[in-house]
Each structure stands twice: as C-alpha cells, then as structure tokens.
Image (cartoon, rainbow, N blue to C red; front, side):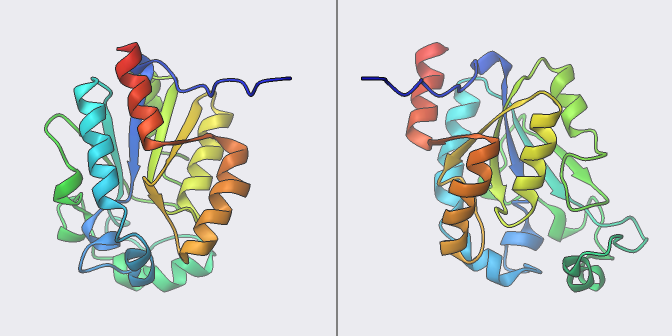
Length: 206
C-alpha cells in the first residue's frame, strides 16, 4: 500500500509569510470590495494567530499592499480595473485605505506596497526582496482566491519559490467558489495545508 508523501512545508529559516492586501481599503470598513470583505470576515482571527506563530518561530511576515497608482490612473483592461479605478486613484502609501489591518500588523513586519497591476509579485520588489533574504518557501495568505493569490502563486512558482497555502488564512468571494478555487486552482500551484499542521511543523523544526 503506497503512502502519500509528506507535504513540503519548508524550513522556518528559509520561509516567509506573505499577507496579500489585508488592508483597510480592502477588508476594513472602507472596503472598495464589500462583497470580498464580507466573505473574509472570518479570516482575520485565524490569520492573526498564524502570524503570531510565525513571529515566534522567527519566520518573517511580509504585507503586500496595494497603495494606489501614485496620482496616475489604474492601468489594465480587466473589468476589475474599471470598477476600482475611480475608488483607488487617490490612494497613496500613507492613505488610511492602504494601511494593514491593525490586528495583523506586528513589530518587525515588512510592508511592501505596490502601485500597479493586479499581481502582487509581477514587476514588484517583493520576490527579489525575499530571495535576497534567503527565502525559498512562501506561505501565501490573505485575499483573494479570485485573482491576486493565483496570480501570485503562479509568478512565485515560475520564479523558483515553493508556495504553501494554509486553509483558513485565505479568502475569496463567494465562499463556495473560494473553496473550489483552493482545491482546483491554488491546489495545482501550491501545497495546501491546515494552519495547525503548518504551525506544528515550524515548532518541530525550529
């Protein structure tokens, strides 16, 4: 009888947690995507606990935020841009909407805002910064399973990173779609695990 191979979860010293767009203007009261914010209302608690475990295990936490187009116009032909352009054109690095949710921000966390595109990894400094820190495994969390997370996972894997996605630390809309996308899309790009399995692995190997 064959056994399933153990999932590759990475070494804590070569792993980073990336939190995508868990910011006030996306998941907070001023969300420009209220349907997503509603679907993600159960995300913050489990994700906060995961990040606390990461910090204690000395796994760096990086927040990838969208901070507006710096006075220009949001570029791209995707329908999502047409929805968001007028709502985000006034955002900047210090705009309230671009700030990480307080429950998820810890001392020593790195915040890397981007100012273009729907993909948090493409054409940004995020992956080079992680590679420069010796990271080869990315724990991908945040929002959303609809678009940003699959784009990120594809970019990261094609750049040579291993990607781990913990259930309960991601969200999308509607929730039933998010479950299917986790299984049938992210599951083809990343190792999907539970939060408890991931944190247990960190403590067993640290």
